[in-house]
Image (cartoon, rainbow, N blue to C red):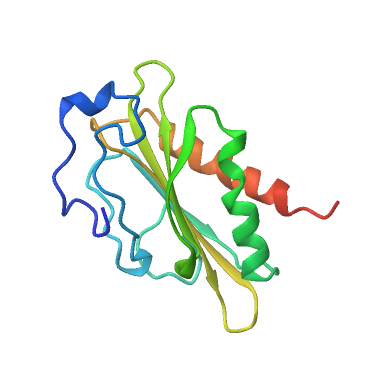
Length: 158
């Protein structure tokens, strides 16, 4: 998954699998600065505004320390149905979740990372994508935007 399409896609059995692995490819961290987006419209990437590569949404830096943003990010999946964390790379402040679709239980993946900036602020990467099909009717964009809104809410002063 790290380079965008360099691994074979899971077989049809993964569509309906409900177990922990669910027929998914092995989790691997994403090298976000080198990520190549798929040629299909079933993905959404929110990336730091300073990232020169393609993205669907540019994110400004957060005026918060990376560890605080990382803690908030790790807790987001609890707010979303049919979503569970399947892998985590704490040294990268990166995690990956499976989000199953409501109707057909398709597995989609959400990977996010918090990057520490030299000035102590944080940059966020969030990548939501389908493993099956060509079009998702905007589901990954909606999911990505919902996760970003949930992160904003989790980080808001109380």
